[in-house]
Image (cartoon, rainbow, N blue to C red; front, side):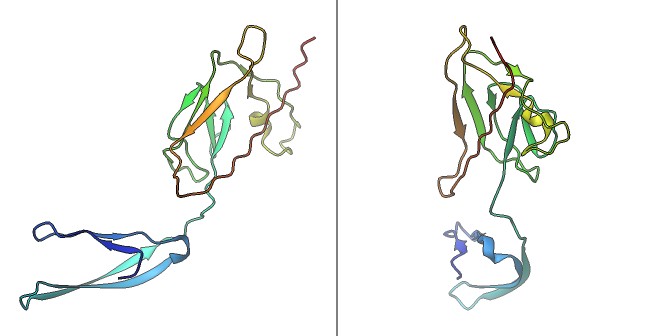
Length: 164
């Protein structure tokens, strides 16, 4: 069997064929399965397997209280589970910002014409901390990551709020 196929040990008269193609395996395949019971009984079945192309560069966009719509996940509380990716698929990935106060500001820098690195309605909102009555730091925990994959994270922060 090809390495992308696995066969579970039979339980009674049933076995499970697992197929786990890689990112380079997109295509249409004609699969033929032959079963031999060891006593002269042989059965063959054939089926078509379609492996759809999938972008290995999954992207998840997160904004604070952002009404930006897809592809953005709008964090309205410090804990958010099952974030959607840029294709609107649930990922099982979550984020928990450990903070003793959840305050979202709306004074992020904006271009006025969405010509920045992110849309204006995303960069205008931010979670802030560090005021005298707040914690001076905010730590985040990302959960649900697959240890067999590699991840890159990009964080953007900006404010035009001037406290004199």
